[in-house]
Length: 171
Picture: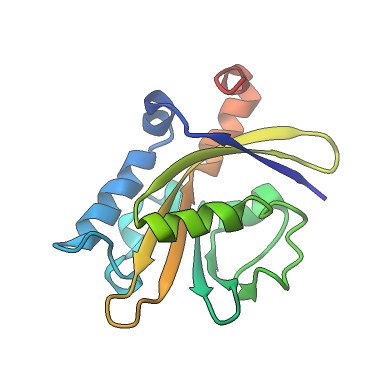
């Protein structure tokens, strides 16, 4: 099992370095006059490919108390070694990488605001990597159906980790 630890919000420099402000811009544009966009208003193709590949979208189903992973980007598959698309989170073998997701996803939906955070994932082999992310709420106005989109730049995370300076920013 991987060990997943929330580290708090990344600083403005990290958000900028990882291009995550673009995800927030696209989310705001999709909102139009509403405070939160609906999933049908959001076009993943509006995200740069590096962010799209590190995006996850999960639908919350309150009757089940569970998230259904609608979309799990290609970079997430490569980075974490699991494919979660089209699976219920409670049934999926996520090897621990989603352990911190539920709590922050519920907070994102309750507050109806973007949530910036970083999480450290230590692989079963002992390699620790830090991933800054933004979680974005999507609420369908007619049904109230909640979705959480998590956007991260896996390519940048791996590059910063390899360069060794990234780990120092999160001590």
